[in-house]
Amino acid sequence: MKKIIVLTGAGISAESGLKTFRDSGGLWEEHRIEDVATFEGWQRNPQLVLTFYNERRKQLIKAEPNAAHKALVRLEQKYDVQIITQNVDDLHERAGSSKVLHLHGELKKVRSTVDNNLVYDLKGWELKMGDKCEKGSQLRPHIVWFGEAVPMIQRATLMTEQADFFIVIGTSLNVYPAASLIQFVPDKAALYLIDPNSGQIPYVKRLEIINENAGIGTPSLVERLLQ
Image 1 (cartoon, rainbow, N blue to C red):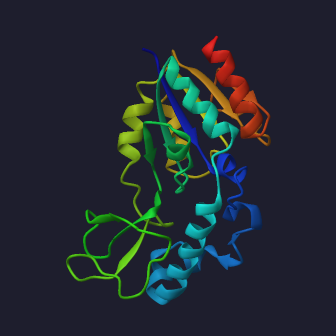
Image 2 (cartoon, helix red, strand yellow; image 1 turned 90 degrees about the horizontal axis):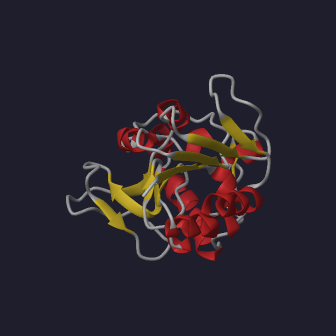
Image 3 (cartoon, helix red, strand yellow; image 1 turned 180 degrees about the vertical axis):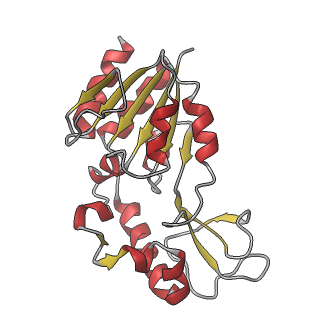
């Protein structure tokens, strides 16, 4: 069975109503990125950070997978499909995709501040000051903040090296290290980029650009690949 690797970014979730910081000039829901998406911000004001991500979870609970998420599930009829997502939502899973790797963490999970291996599913939407791990330390969002290491990037690179098809959806390929994955796609693999604002990428050959929103471009490409 041929292998399709899909790299998804904020553009696929935006169509489900989830805003991204890139929509608003370095602000995310009226907050500076430095205040809510860095470890330094967490150290300065952990309550602000907790409140911010609690609001993101409340927003996510109301969101639904869109046509792009659902189309990727159909690909599993014919291919081994593995999704690498930069998004922290669970819309791929809720749509029915069976193999999803989260590069930047997961909004519905929390982790220890003294042991990164202690990760827990959060029941409901609210994480509070005083909620602690089994070692007695405050729990934090299970999110890879700016300036932190991306522990899943090596696994994502190994997956990319096995691709027969590599599909990029809803990302500008400006966020590293995720953007570097395209350099590990095998020469034999077909390459597609679905994004309404993308131009040709100088260092990437044989790239087919589909200048559409994810909700239109993804179902269209999926139908082609299934025929």
